[in-house]
Length: 234
Image 1 (tube, rainbow, N blue to C red):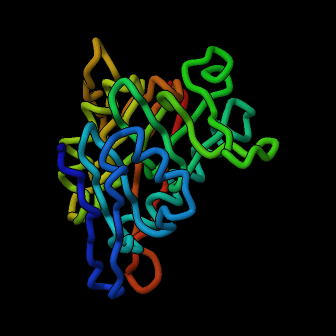
Image 2: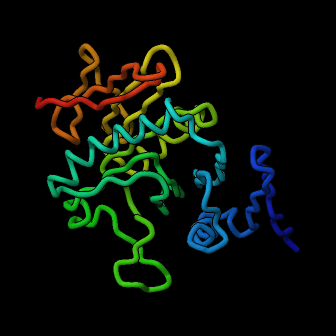
């Protein structure tokens, strides 16, 4: 008789809590069912990466992650949503690919209406059947932005990029604001793999936006960092 996978317990020392990953979640299909259930945690980031469950329950650093995400998402909102081209999503928005066995909640993702019309990805409705109650995308977003934290270095820089490429995400931005030098890298999908686009004085051409962008930061009150995604026509 085949052995049955055991429930996985992950202890969060910061909050004194335990995360229970049920046995059925250790397959891709089972993970997606778990992610849609009421038992799925509302806190932290839990992804399925080609057979491995990645759990990150660490709180975000306020000035090297949270405000970076807010600044980038706000500017993308102006460039995409306000121009009625699509939508920008932050956290808790799940994108899945059965072919790659990838199910993730990126820091930031953008989806164009044209991609939905061309069925490059589709919205999955809630099992409760509420009208307009979509809870997940199946297929690649048009842009993914990941912001590196101390607990996500390996995932963001090594494991996720090739999976996003296999999923078919056309453009991938990687940001690391933890060090003395602010890292902002734009990757374009070419021939099934990502190619880093060269910068010019911090400016880099985003094929997705059709304009040059750069991320800058300045010190504000209490010597805290503030960020701005600058852009100009190519």
